[in-house]
Image (cartoon, rainbow, N blue to C red; front, top):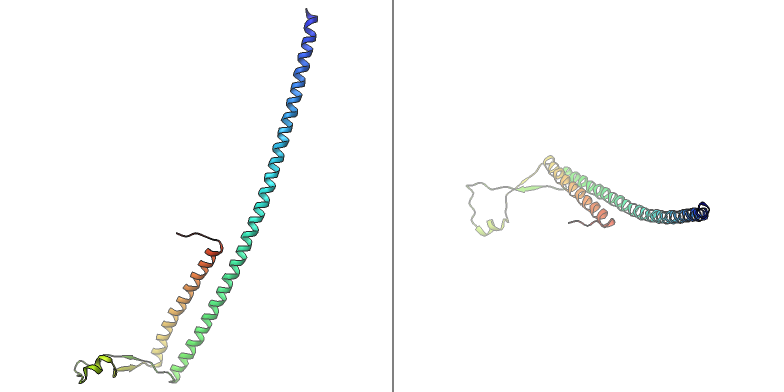
Length: 169
């Protein structure tokens, strides 16, 4: 009986070894296929990342150039406004330009022609001294400068928003 089992055990043992080997080859083939797929996905992701990075860098350069151009424009506006203010102040100091403000006439004053009073044809005015005129012009100039700066800020915001296609609510 032992002799009849030996060939059967040998055949079974050979079958197990062959199955084990075939299973190992199949496992190795699956691992290799997974590694190839992962390598392809990694290469594709790296290519997409490089393309996206290039697009963003292009957008950043364009936005940076637009912002630099807007800053230059603001500097030019500020310089032009300062030149105009300086010229105006020089004219006020020299007397070429005189500033006045309306003043309320005395309560006892009576006007014979109410139509003239209503139209303010002969309105009482007080002339400002040059220092007061310069001080008022400086206040107005500071307000104008702030408005220009805020407009430049809004323009910069809109440039960045439009460049990067940001949706705002």
